[in-house]
Length: 373
Image (cartoon, rainbow, N blue to C red; front, side):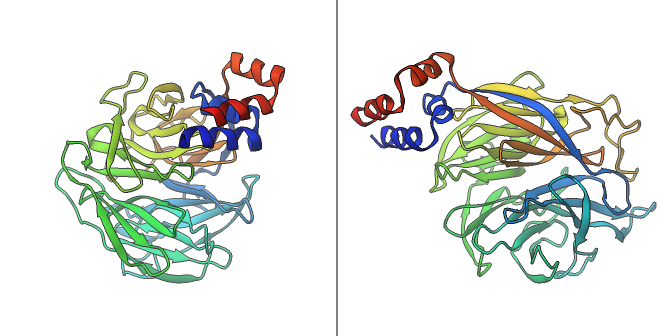
């Protein structure tokens, strides 16, 4: 009954496209739209873009920009370690933050970022300082920091806070990449309110949880379980529902997925990092399509410049996919080792027969069917 009620509301307010979704018969077309940024270390240039967000009030695009290192591998606070800002046309506007290895106002590798839907504040994962830093996105003013996350784990390159996502109650869900759990904080107070999961391979357990998104449609929690090569889907209360994916490079398989998002139709998008592509799945985890192909260059070695060599900036070519953000039928995808964000159009396609019925009979007919179910 609940599903049928949702069906009738969706059809009455949104029409043709939502009908296809409610029937769970959508396909998705993914195509290149544009590029933001370019590889390099200067203003408006990017390296290792991990977090991407679009500000509702302005449409400006915020991108986390790399961790600066000297040739000897020591920390360089003046390279990267900031959030770059671009206008909706992709023109560079400025940046937020500086490099620092002291907790507080300054980044030691900014990663995922999210805007608080209630206050508009910008929350940024500060990986190696093991905290979340909060800024005023309009002025660049540092506001506060909160949270605590795990340290290095043998055999893992990264640690600390991973993906982040707000729910509709003012909570922010943050994956702890090292401790293999999801930590839920009250966004206004920074208080830890609960922890979800544990370390392992069983349902509801994680190994290197990375990207996370809380669906605004259903409240479901989607998590890229990176080293288990799967996506886990949890109920709003944190209980395991199902998982999909396995290790590999075939359609529907994953090689350490990082970013993850859902659209208004509950289609699921995964930045399949080492396969250098974005994969789309329906709400039940069934493979729909993918976009992207790998560059010929391998990822850079540790300590080397953070770019593939040679670069291949052809649209749709990636050297690992990382950060992922969905906004207004567009996917913003971090081209990890090519210093740019590629923007992909995501166009759902409803079932042809249902489309004919809708236009031939009308919305009122379908509203009646929904109410009777």
